[in-house]
Length: 332
Image (cartoon, rainbow, N blue to C red):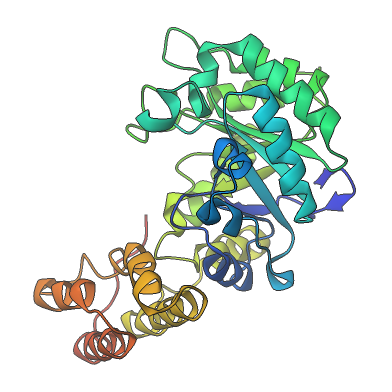
């Protein structure tokens, strides 16, 4: 799959842009486990224009995480253009326009998936940004605002006509948020539309190697984007890639292996963000892997309440020792 001059190979795996998740430390870790393309946390165009430090920091890229795209969102055309130019100056491989975020504070104010209610504005923003920068522009969006407005087929054609070089489609409406099951039927229709020539990336419920292969085979998309399933489980990229290549499932990651990987996430995060901010950031990952272990609750509470790297490492070691002989159930 190619996006402009960027060759990502056959059926690449992309790490979805996720707020408070896809910081540089996690992006690098996912790349080490097989992700082919990283995306930053989404960045507010309005905040960039106002030079808000927290948003400016999101533009800081590291060579070892490439290829990487910077995702921006907003509803003001002029601000989106300036933000795109600021993002381009950080030298990412591409700029991604967020027309899919469903959270109320973004969509409810006319940004993200809110633009599915104002398609002329969506197209005006896209047209202006494509003309303002010299690197590929891509889009991530949803099927529509709700079941009564499934506009993605028409939207895809319009975006392609404006010069977008790849389109990622999340198989839910904004109304669904992240509930229910992703509907890939319309993603497949967009991909198989003879008018469409740009890569189509499928997103939504890519939570196991088996599902990844099924989505690729059934709907013919060019690539898969993995989002929430990577939180606390960066090794999912390795699992998917191995299954796609060999047809065989890797053995389940043991509890001990998970504790080592979680310790690595904490240390990487604190090295980049400082101990306090790094631990707060890493808790999102720590909360995921061990929650189904029998009798884990007291240790899990200790893990999520620990306030130092040393304390977290100690609890992880105890979890590893306590469940050393525990057989992890098959993943989804």
